[in-house]
Length: 611
Image (cartoon, rainbow, N blue to C red; front, side):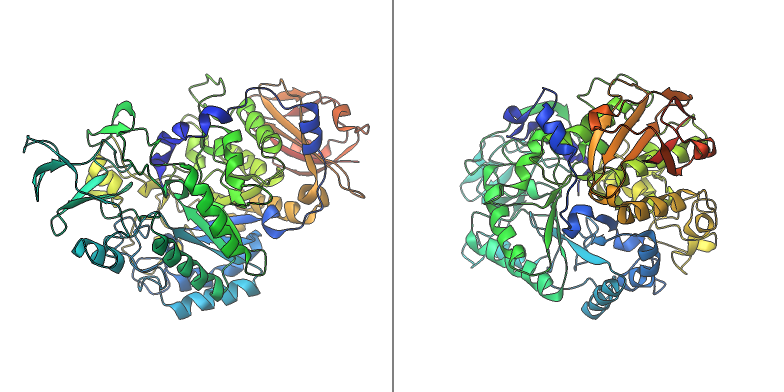
């Protein structure tokens, strides 16, 4: 949910004890190299995030909707996805574009109706696609009836459904956030800061109290120390499970509980975009009670048939810390906590190439290896794009690179996403190479983060622009000449229609990769073992074969220069040196038949079967 969540990830309570600095043991490496026979659907899934207002407008109001998504399910089936993660489509004042929910058991009219949702669900099933909903449990909208009632008095039935506090006395009526309380002037009870700038406390005159909000002031945090709150949220979960959804992506799930004593948090030493001192969120995120909650939630979801599941928005400072969010065999929590270290993390791996700090073989090798050896055999979920981060096309390339180089780099990212052992999470438009279109002036910004933080913080509009379907007006997203965000200026060349007719396009590359992932038994079930571990320029790994199949080699040149590789597969107990290319963006590699001295052209991706 939150772009800036990365700023406090390193201070999670678990991080101090969870850091692993030693390389994987031979036993861990051997375990990762073993093929699997577990066909649980989500362990092999390609999950495709859709931001509903940006995917397809069916009624001409300039905003995407559920019927628009339904109309494009054939495209998604051809792409090969297994599930759609649908960003919030519940009723909402849209302060945070749906992450401020005012009713958990309905559809916002701008997106359609419950009947439209049921039609989407049924049609998706016919296309072999599951639906996963975004469930925002940390907070509601301040327009939710629960909060309206809670804010009305200190004695109403929902008076303690949110986190209220009298504040602490002050003699300075001009102090920041000072208010006249029933017993004199008061200020917030502590120094907690909102992740979306400013104090995390907001005054309500009707109660003469402050309420706590980790995010916007229009998003008051629920009080999960009240069992009635948990029951109400679990009822909402059951409402959608009863309709047939496959599971939930849990937004900002680490922030459900706060220090009940409301102690001050250590400060980061930085000011946010509004000039307010940032707290490090050690007492407002990652508390142990969150794990107990997830175990109870998991029990609810697991009580339904069909391998329902939970994805968690989790940002951790290292891979070992991520392991705790899976739970244990007897106390399971999340099926797939998001591993964002590979796709978003830049610090902590000794990379000094400031011109392009993340397209580095050592970075990929480190985090892929850790995901396979430090998660106790759990399935990783890799992600390179979502609605809170600039698109990977821009983050992994530089302005000086040509379009062809950037496209080749995008193919490298896709290859890693779809040929490793992990479940894969992608984002609408990544498959065609959509780029980030950051607003150039404050008056064009829709995201409140950008409105309040401009120019230091420009918001997240750039990664949320409408899907680019074709070369016609509004790129086929909407018949309306005014769309909720402008269509990307590059839609004439980057769009589904153009790339569908080009056999060498990024879209066709992604279709081929996902088909290989689904149909090739080694890419589907094989283990993984890194090769050529000291090579600073090329990432190479082998997917070890299940019985009756052949191993698969993946080599990726992450530089603008040709690279010759010399691969020793003895560690994978592979003696054959004969290979058959399966997929590459370098025509010269299509005639390669042996492992000896393979020269990879600049930014080449090479996938070959070892015969």
